[in-house]
Length: 403
Ligand SMILES: Cc1cc2nc3c(=O)[nH]c(=O)nc-3n(C[C@H](O)[C@H](O)[C@H](O)COP(=O)(O)OP(=O)(O)OC[C@H]3O[C@@H](n4cnc5c(N)ncnc54)[C@H](O)[C@@H]3O)c2cc1C
Image (cartoon, rainbow, N blue to C red; front, side, top):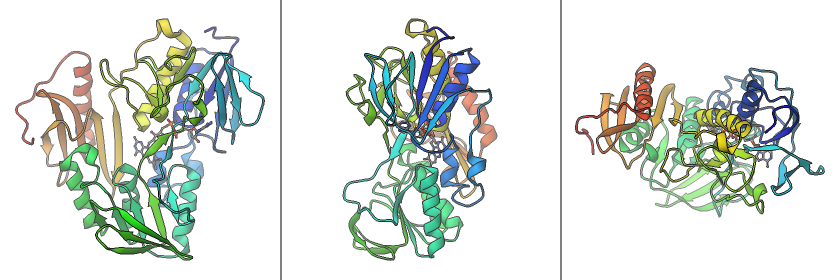
């Protein structure tokens, strides 16, 4: 691409969109930069929504994300990108006439998933946007009825923790047998115990069988026969990529927009994708997948910007070391690399199931990932080890202690 005269359109004014824009300017792109966002807000810090923002410790203004360089961008906020004609390089923003682009960045993230059969009711909410969080705050102020959180992943457990710390009665309903099941039973059991210790009623292997929407609250019959009456029910059961607007564009949008290793969207010229909406082979030989974490949106946005400017033939693969964090009851959980219940696991430091410690994840005896609980300094060290591994120096561990 010619860096001076052209127009790059960024679809999605979230974290990945912002960091892509920033990198484009850092790399000397001096053409027109259009950033379209479905929400009315400038990009903001989404992770705080389930934590400090809901708890009232941070306000709207403190959540706003800023660029480190002057973006000189044409922000089109409150307007969704509706259609892409990749053949003619046209994109439609809101109801306006489609505009031509020379480069397009897809950074539209995900929306919260709503399972089938859930009634539309003002007290049944999801948490993805700042508006969602504010609606939830209003409900919490209205009465002190119990809260039900449905889900067992990060958003669900963080929400339960924030609500419990506000002295609300909280029931956490998860259909799986363990919380944070994606990290394996050691962390999952530890987190379950942590929640129970803080008074959260954790219901595992449980689903909502029947909903009873009422005027002042919502009734829920659970499998197992229990009945709950809640003033607030939050569905925290994962996200779905915001890629419907790409239907008919030629992009593969089955579970996110499919990209090659360089973030270029498969089959579409001069289109890259970044952040939660993108599916790509994270490492050579791996099946394409999405990563819904903060640092990935930052790093992928920056990589996508460079690769868009350099063009497909000169682009370099984006092969990050996936990392994320979560905070619950003031405790920090951090992860790096490949983690999951399918890997063999060994305790590297302490006992993360019960308290501070680091758990290692092994593939054929080799360390591929770590999760730490309340060990931020150790985490820096282990993350460096995993990075070294990616650049060639391998770390073989003794037989794992846990299978
Ligand atoms: C409650 C919550 C807590 C989280 N906590 C953590 C955490 O502790 N640690 C961690 O690592 N990650 C956390 N995350 C995940 C992290 O926030 C995301 O990975 C990150 O925000 C992804 O950035 P993104 O730009 O890809 O998507 P988003 O931040 O979702 O931005 C996408 C933007 O595109 C907009 N959009 C959608 N469709 C269109 C369209 N058609 N046209 C124009 N704009 C559109 C959306 O409105 C949105 O503003 C959390 C997420 C949530 C919701």
